[in-house]
Length: 496
Image 1 (cartoon, rainbow, N blue to C red):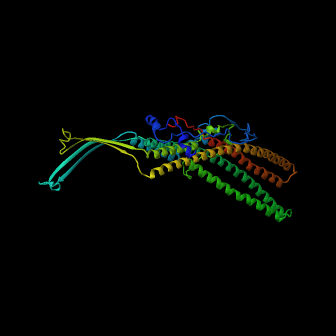
Image 2: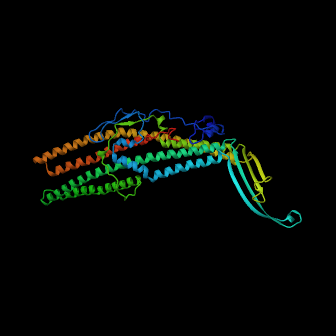
Image 3: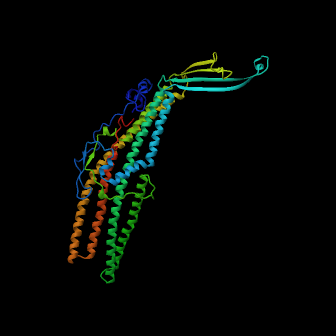
């Protein structure tokens, strides 16, 4: 938004969340522009080229086709993967995660901060006072004669103080606090979405690494056997020593890859434990395989104009924009007169018995009107607040653009991943067919054992790539649910 057109562009926002009906009505009289929701993105799609009606299908697990449908994202979207162990783990994590606990506590703090400010500005402040003092008065200090007197003086009173919010500065301050409380609410929803997505991704990664370790171990066994046979052939004079060295290099390279995969798997398990709110050494976490996940066939897709109302990070950026707009109104209100009214009614007497007797009543009524005449800091504060609004507007635009890019990346990844898996599945079928043919030839004596071992290694190597492609389709499907903001939607009911 252009700061020069700020006051002209902003229109009344409507019902203000967390504010009382009285404040919502009076806020229309406050100085400074009323907040207006930013305009929705003008684009109707995420990518320049159209998306395929359905993705490519391939044989094997996670190979079914996927299509994009106009449907709401389920609140518990991870259940679309059809893994009971995953559902249970995420349910536990949402209750036990310290990240969620911190976000919830931060939200409560923001709400109570708003309540504290509302209680001190919306209503008159009433204080009761009861005091007693003992005094010694010397008449000579007043130019009089006589002995010094010692007496007691008792006071009791009720005081009322209220600031008439003529310019609406207090109401704008409350509006800013309400917006910041909403920002914390969106942060909580974002933390919930991120936690669930991280657990899904970590669980799928665990399944991928476990499968790749098994395939790598099978390759290593075949290579060890091939190396043993080659050494025997060298001993019998049927092979050169260089053949042994070449095979030994290959074996050790494969063996060196196993600790790296195991390290990744172990670190992945530690991460999964922490995400679930447990210590890494606590144990008791479920293990996952790719076979127990189901690739969703129908993936939801919403228009960009609806995305901005769904993603918690976009809603959080809008809440900060709302707060900056209200804080600009606070800075403007400081340039206007401030009217404070205070009154007190009480009793004053020399003894407690006479404190409420006739003639002991005292009262006061004070009205104070303050108008800044010369304070160079106030216009600078106003300009600073306007610059903060411009920064919040630019940040909002950046968050929206990043969200659109996020969705576009995932949509393209889903299409390309399906094509990759289809090619690798076809290659796997060919590798398995070649292995079966080699097994038949070996049984008939038409192929050597070394040739059989080579065919086994090729099949397992292709299996490693196939596992990676299968897991990537699952990861990107979960990424789409996350990119669309999960199943949470900013509605009036959710903001209460």
